[in-house]
Image (cartoon, rainbow, N blue to C red; front, side):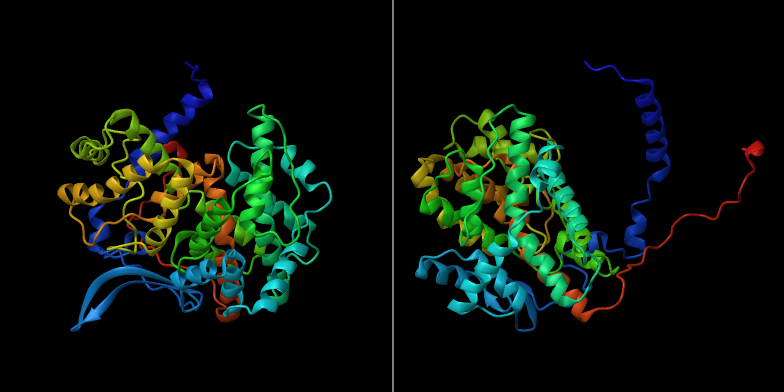
Length: 452
C-alpha cells in the first residue's frame, strides 16, 4: 500500500474544505427553473442555436400531441440509413462520402468523391520528425491526451494558424480529418512499445485507402484484415461522424470557436470533451460492465440471473457502483437509437465470422431486459433503449482493437462533424457564446486577517 505523503494530506484537507463549502442547495435549481445540463425534465435540450449540418428526430406530432417514434438521424437532410444502404449497394466505403456531405452540404458525384479522397491523401502528411519528436518521445497511457497534444502541437507548424478565413479553416480541417487515424494509432503504438514493452510498428498508409482501412492496416502487426472487418468499421465511422449540434463535444467546438480562436484549439477542446466517460468513453464502460457480468452470471440463458445483476448495477452494488447500466438510454432517443438499430445487423454478421454468436445473443438479451429493469426501479420520462455505444465496444473487441483506442476512433469519425460545425459557426454567428448563471451566494463583508 502506497504511503500518503504530507503533501497529499495537505491537499486532502483542503479538498474537504471545498466539499464542505462548495455545495449548493439542490432545491434552488428547481426554484429558479435551472435547466441542469441544458435539458428539461424530459431530457429535451434547451435551444441554443441553429444548424444545417444534421438533425435528430425522435418524435412526431399526432393530433396536436408529441408522440415518441423510432429515432432517425439525418446528415444535411439525408437519412443516414439511406446513405448506408447506398454504400452497401455499391459495395464501397462510405465515411469519406459522409465527410464530404457534412462539409459541403451535398453528396459528391464520382469525380468529386475521387478528388476528395485524393485531397485527403495529400493532406495526410505529418511534419518532418513529428512522429519521433512529438509522439514517440512522450508516450501517454491515455490516447485521447496524446491526440489532443498532437493536435495542439500541429498548430506550431502552421504559418497561418490564426487565419479564420473559410479557405484556411477548411484546409486545417481537412488536415485534421486526414491525420486523426495516424495520430491515434501512432500514439497507441508508442504506448504499446514504451509503456507495455511490445514491439513498435509505424506503418505508412497508401494513397486512396479508406479511413477504416488505414486504421486496421496501421494498427495490426501484419497489416491484414478482411473485407467485412473494414466495412463494419467504416459503418461505425459513418454512424459516429455527426450527431446534431447539441452533443457535448460539438457544442464545445461551437463555444470555443465563438471566441475567435484557432482550429487546433477548438478541436483540442472538443477532444477533451469527448474523452469523458459520459460522452465518448461510454463504450469502454459497456465493455467493463459486460466483463463484470460474465464473472457474476455463468448461465447466459438465465434471464432471472441477468436481471438480478442489472438490478445490482442500478442499486450501486455491482461493477463501478455508479448506478448505471451502460449503453442503455440516451439524452435524446427514447424508443430506439437509429445508429444502434442500423449497426446491430452488421454486428451480428461480424459475430458470425468471429465465432461470437453466443456473446451476441447475450447482448441481445440485455438489450431486451435492461429497459424492463430500469422501468421497475426508476421513474422515467421517456423510453429507454440501447444506444450505439452498447454495440460499438463489442465490435471493436471483435476487431481486435485495443480498448485504449475506442474513444480515439470515435474522434476519428466525429472530427468530420466538428469541422462542419466550426465552419458553420464562423459563417453564421459572430457572437461569443456566454450562457447565464445565477449567483446564490450571500453578500459577506470582508474581514481583515487579524480579525478572522
